[in-house]
Length: 124
Image (cartoon, rainbow, N blue to C red):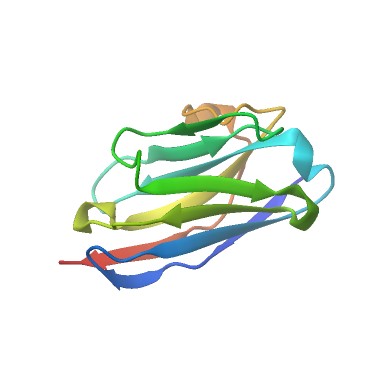
């Protein structure tokens, strides 16, 4: 069982930056692939970024590639999402997710554990 708690969301102007954190409780964090998904009002949840359990591979949606960076610190049981050059269309609730033995996939059904989400609002 893994519990995930996101933090770091907030209100930022377009062009600004935010760093999201996701703290995981439970054992064997290093055996989980991790992902960040987001859901904007009136839209379906979509993949943003993923990272494999051994930090050998990262995966990004085309819409965030070059602006967002996912990383993890297995010693701290934490995964991060650094978001730079934010745009109003990045406004959404951001969710952290964990998949046992995962690869950082963009498929939400591969993730068994989800956080409660953190709101990111980008003003124009």
